[in-house]
Amino acid sequence: MKMPLISLGILVGMTGVGCAGLDEAEAVDSSVSTDATSQVTQELITNVTGTSPVTFVATSGNETKPYNQSFTPVVAYTRDSTTGAFTAYPGTGAADGTISVPNVPSGRIYLKLGSRYLVSTGRTFDLGSTEWGRDGTFVSQPTPVTVSATGLSPWQPGDYLEVYSLNAGAFGYVNTGVTGFPLAGATSLSGMSFNYANMLNPVLLDSSLGDVLSLVQMRWKTTANGVPYRAMHKVLDASVTQVEGQPVTVSGTFTQPAATGTFSVDWRRSAFEAMRTQVNPDAVSTYSEIWMSARPAALSSAVASISGQPLLVKLNPDAQKTDLVTGSMTYNNALPANWQKVALAAAGFTKSYALGSAAPYTMSVDIRVDQEASAFTAAPVQPLVGPVQAPLVNTRGAFQNLTGVGLDASLRWSKPLVGTATNYVVNIYRLGTSNGYTTVTRVTSLHTDLQSVYLPPGVLQAGQTYFAEIQSWYQPGSDLATSPFKRALPRGRASVLTGMFSP
Image 1: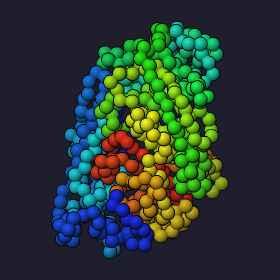
Image 2 (image 1 turned 180 degrees about the vertical axis):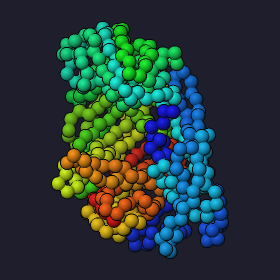
Image 3 (image 1 turned 135 degrees about the vertical axis):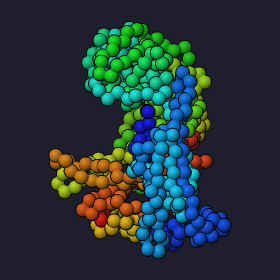
Image 4 (image 1 turned 90 degrees about the horizontal axis):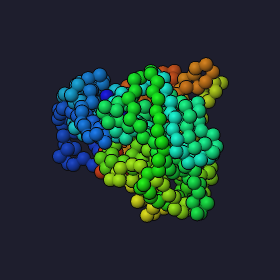
């Protein structure tokens, strides 16, 4: 089954949690009713359950299947606020997508699904998702696609080729690492060849299922305000059936879609840049971009990024961080007319981590906004939520490098200065070395509605070095601690990167 994210492992405001005490918040959550609080005290025994329906949204029709949880390790942990000890309650996952953990005391739990933890007082979890494209198989072996086609508008520097298949949910770019790439002025492709396995989402295509391979000329253009951008221009469609590892040949003519549109934004890049040192005092700004696309309306709750390929407009005009009013950006639209137009704005930041004399690893994060495209044109585009403030490992500032944090360390933080976080996600990464380079491995993710988490047994290992990414999420009407794979519009996210720490 095509489930890239679930297969990875699958707020109550605690202002000043470092002073008020994390244990009290974990023992009795201030959002719990009086009756529920008495249940926590009495330690009523409950069952933890979950379901995993996956809906695939394809042009050939939607289909819902259960995600097979029979191979997913399932454990519910409770934590004693007095002793700090975790108690494990083993559970099971089934092929029908259900999970079950019996005989769990009431109160906050750390529900472990694979390498992911859902930190919640809930007892019923929705582990399902909605995905763009039919249920398919990813290509992993080199699978060449050779294209000969006419009808390109004269190729110019800045143009690039985009690949997608609406029914399969496949997408990617053809820009580098190909043979026969068009030269300036070219109006045709003559035996251009690329490896389909290198696409971002290389779902194996089957024309008998309704799959069509689309190759798009994304055209370099400039607005009346002098702002450069790229837009969907001409499209080649071809029915293709692939066998993994075997080459296919595509031929045809690029044509210009009859439907057109315009898109304009007041882009407050300075508002994203102003948060750089909140990501980390040593963070480096890298890129800023806006994408505008279209999606079936059902994908407003998609597990994948709501805004992404196939693109109608891509805007990353320069490396500046100043505000920008684009003026009208025009595009040709080959996507279904009834699809919802959506947009994403993101600003990227990096921080380097190095173990000893090994070459550093550069960690990339972002601050991003997903909204309907109409929201981007109606108001200035700026962050919906900012990074968390004052992150701590135990009681020490998390931006510094720390040792001796213990195997049962906690992470805590204050609310963002901008916007309202509806949930938080903490990613823990382990550092290592290989061939003279620093390496990074994600150990776990913890979803919570609190401003704090304890790290359960086994997350940290003696003699190892780690860092954390703390994400603040703004996604009204959705609880990532009980429905971790649900997405909705509007949506905002911002990251903080800590320093290194070790037990």
